[in-house]
Image (cartoon, rainbow, N blue to C red):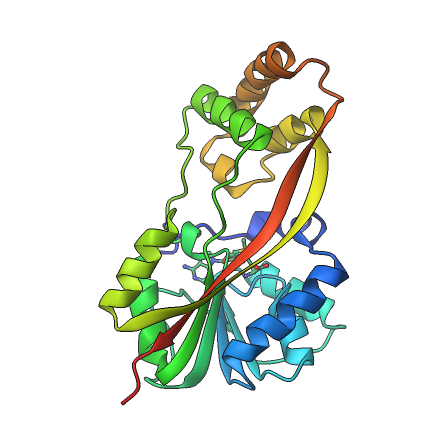
Amino acid sequence: MDRGESLVFDRAVEYYDRTRSLSSASMDKLVPLIRRDVGDGPCLEIGVGTGRIALPLQAGGTAMVGLDLSQPMMRRLVHNAGGRLPFPLVAADASSLPFADDSFAAALAVHVLHLIPEWRRALEELVRVVRPAGALVIDIGRETKGPFRDLLAQFAAAANIPETHRGINDAGELDAALAELGAELTQTHVIEEMRSASYDKTIEALKAGTYSITWAADEAARHRAAAHTRRWAEARFGPLDRRYDYRLEIALRTYRLQGF
Ligand code: SAM
C-alpha cells in the first residue's frame, strides 16, 4: 500500500462536515435514491469519511461497512453516530481491499476516486468484492464552473500546483473503465443545492488549505497565491465582499455488474 499517494483527509476533519454538509431536504432526496440501487446491503463505502452518506443510509435500513485511510475521519464518523460504532469500519486503502471476493451486494464511492491515483485499481477491487449483478454507486464530483473555478485557476497557477485532481477527473473515463470491467451504467441522478459565498471568503479558504486540491502547496506558497488571487479578483469582479452563487451537488452514477 502506498499511503502517500492517495489524499488522506486527516487534516480536514475539523471542518469537513461544516463545509460539505447537504441540507436535510437534499439528504431526504438522496438517501432513497441510493437505497433504491444498493438495497439492504451489505454495502461497502470506500472513503466513508465522517459518514455524511453512510450514516443516513444505515439509518434508512442499508447494512453498511465503511473503509477509509483516515482514522481521524472515521473517529469523527463514530462521534457523528452518537459515540457508538454504527457499523464495521476498516482502516485500509481502497486500491487493496481486505475483503474476499463477492462479499458485498453493493458498493458506494462518493467524492473519493478523484483522490486516488490508482483509481482504476480501486474500481477493479470494487468489482471483485461486489457480487455478480450487484450495484456500484459512484460520484466523482463534478467539474465546477463559474467564479470558484476562475479563482482556483488563478490560485493554482500562482502556487504552481495542478488544477486537476490526482485521481479521476472525468465521468466519461469512469464509464469506459467500468464498461471494460463488465459493469453497465444504468442510472444517473443529480441532487443540487444553490449556495453563495463571497470572493473574500473563497480566497481565504484557498489560502487556509480548505480544499484538498490546494494541499500540494505549502503554507507560504498558499499565502503568496492568495495575495495574487485577491489582486486578480478585485480587478475582475470588483469589491471582494460581494457574493456569487454556486451549486453544491452530488452527481450519482449507478453501474450494474454482470450477472452469472
Ligand atoms: N464519501 C464521504 C463523503 O462523501 O462525505 C467522504 C469524502 S472525502 C472528500 C474523501 C475520503 O476518502 C477521505 O476521508 C479520505 O481520507 C478518503 N480516502 C482518500 N484516499 C483513499 C484511499 N486510497 N482509500 C480509502 N480512503 C481514501
